[in-house]
Length: 166
Image (cartoon, rainbow, N blue to C red; front, side):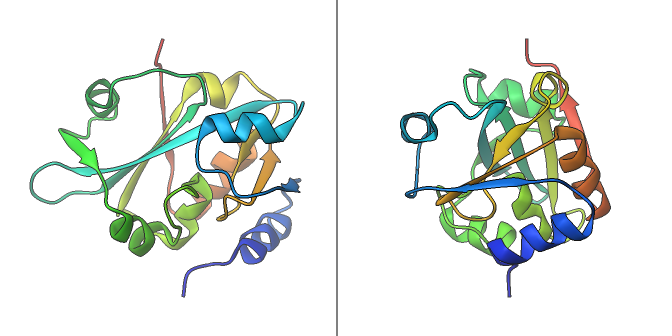
């Protein structure tokens, strides 16, 4: 069974990570998120869940600053992932335990180490005191320090590769 939103928040708390969760109506796009969040301070994210275009290999989860524009091909090249394509909804649920619209780096708690390569926009990781991600549901947003998120995910077997996407 995949982890629940309550379970992942409890795991953050047990790891000593301060997290501020705000509940809201479900959001499926960055535009919807902007219209609901008001003035939450910090970096806001968008996520891409990709799979190898041919053959096997790990999936690719990219967490980017919400305004970041980058081609999927450039992103894959920087992540040393080869050619990629969008993963299916079924692959997303099977790997990260979340449906489309709820993609989040916290979904890595449901992925076996080595099955997903995790990359993050370096500006997002280093340019904000707090970033906002979904806690396994798109009906809430959780703010936490990027360094805490990266430490937590590394402890789950998913170290991040920080990408310079200028």
